[in-house]
Length: 482
Image (cartoon, rainbow, N blue to C red; front, side, top):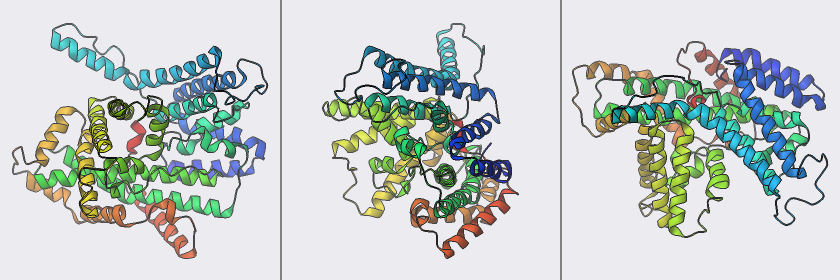
C-alpha cells in the first residue's frame, strides 16, 4: 500500500484516523500498532512475522541491558554512572545487532551473493549454484531494522530508558507513517512523545499541509519526470542532449519522490500527534558533497555518522584512518540502498569525494568559485553518481555515461525518441521541477504557520493532485525497493 493511492487516501487513512481519535489515550498505541501491521502486511502478511521477530528480540534485549538481566525493575544504578557494562549487557546488544543485520543481510543480499557466486564459478569454468532459491525482499526492512537497532544501542549507551511496555515499543517500530521508506526515526527522538504528546488543530493543519504538498511533489512532479527517465534509460539510441535530459529528470524524480514520501510521513505523524525530524533540506542547493550529505536523506546520513562512523573512530585516529572510515561508511551506505555493484560504486564515488573534501578542511576543491558555480559543479557530480544508482547494472551505467559524453551512434530513430521526450507537457514539468528545486522554500519551513492564503494553496494542490492521480497509471515509489 502506497501513500499516493486511492486505497490509502480514501479508505485506510480516514478509518485509521477516526479509530485513533475515538480510542482512549491508553489504547492509542495498541490501535496504532494494529493498523500499522495491517498497512505493512497488505502486500504480503508474512512480512509482519519478520517485523514482529525483530521487534521482540530488540524489546527483550533492551530490558536485559537496562535491568542487567531479567530483573523486572529499574536498575539500581544508572547505566551512564560509570560507563561499565556487564558481559550479559554486552551480549544482549550483540544479539540485537546481529539478529537485525542477519535479517537484513539474508533477505537483501542473498540473491546478490548467489548471483556473484554463479558468475565467478562460470568465469572459472566450475558448475554454479543455479537458481536454487530466490528470496523476496520485505518492504522497508532496511528502515525498520536500523530504527529498531537504534533503540538497543541508545539504551546500552545510557542515552535512553528502556520501555517496559511491549505495545509502546511495537508502536515505535511499526508506526505506518515512516515504516517502509523512512525517515529513520531514532528512539531518542520520540521517546518522550511515546509517553506524552499534544494534539492541536494547528499541528493537524500542518500535517495536512505536509501531506498535500508531498502528494503534489509525487503526482505532479516525480511521476512525469519518471516517465522521461523510463524512456531515456530504456532507449536503444540516445543523443548527448537526450542523455543529459534523462539523468537530470532522474535527479528530479528521486528527489521529489523520496522527499514527497518524507513530507507525507512527517505530515501523518503530525496528525497522530508526533513530530518527526526533517529529512531533506534543498540538497541540490549544496555547494559541496559534504554539504550535500548534510541536506540529503538527513536521517540516514546522521544514523551512519552516529552509529557507524563515530564508533569506527571517526576523525579521532588520524587522517588516514579518517579517510578509510569515510570510504567504508559510504560504501556500506551504498550497499544499504541495494544489492548491486552499482550501489557500491555510487557509495564509493561519494566516499572518495568526502575524503578529498576532508583534506581541504571540509571544503570542495572549487570552493573559491562563485556560489552559482559551486552549486552547479556539485549538482554535476551528483548527476554522474546518479547514473550508477539508476542503471540496472554496471554495463548499462557505463553505456549511459558514454552517451552523455557523446559516444555511441545515433540512429534515425532518435527523431522519434525526441518526439516522445520533448513533449510540451514533459518540458513544462521539467521546468517546474527545476524552479521548485532551486527557488521554492522547503515544506518544513513553509508550513510552520498556516495562514488562510497558504490553506488555499494547500487545498488547490491537494485537489489537483487527486484529480491527476485518477488518470496516472505510472505511480511507483522508488525507495520502496530499498
